[in-house]
Length: 97
Image (cartoon, rainbow, N blue to C red; front, side, top):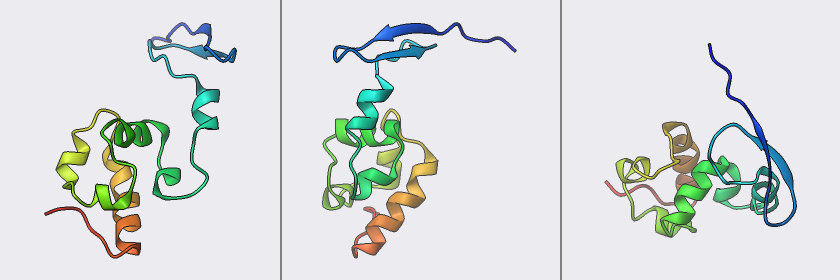
């Protein structure tokens, strides 16, 4: 098993953090922008960014997509689907067939 070398980085807001990948996302900034409520608040940061970067910020927008379409988004994994299904169902919506 190899370990990745972590390097310290500083974001544009001055937060210092360690990363072992080339991902530029600052964990502190990401936590600050996480919604406090709504369906996006129940998702992991990569899944939330995947939806946002594809213009999906409401359950109505989400309901226009199929599960397979959502899974094609970079950062979206199958573990997020049950959370999304439940959020849609609670609002009388579902994924596109």
